[in-house]
Picture (cartoon, rainbow, N blue to C red):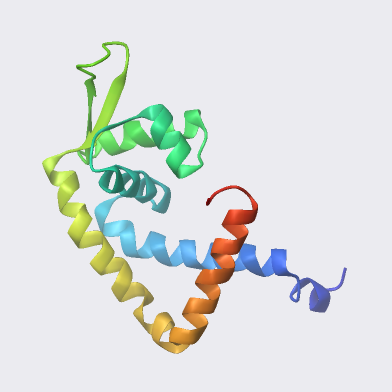
Length: 146
């Protein structure tokens, strides 16, 4: 396949868009010593509004158990989360943001919004809504949305 056809492929462009967006997120998150994937774990914890166990984090982030285990260790080491034994079931460990981790809930979205602002302004509201609709269709098709 020549490069002209490759650059017109949807899969190729989805992947390239992911790679360049992730690169920008890495730059934006560097001062917090947190990766985009670790940030997704934090988002899952913030969104739930209550402590989660590892299985729930795996389900919410679409990552595998060994990957989530490594992320949890790193987030705990950096002081963003803490692990505790569940009071309801002593065999389950629950994960929750620390006080320091909760500070990320306000700081990081502002940082990411500032990073995305030039692109979002360039994109325009109609294109943003179209892109969001298409991405949700993809997620729905593959069972990630109901």
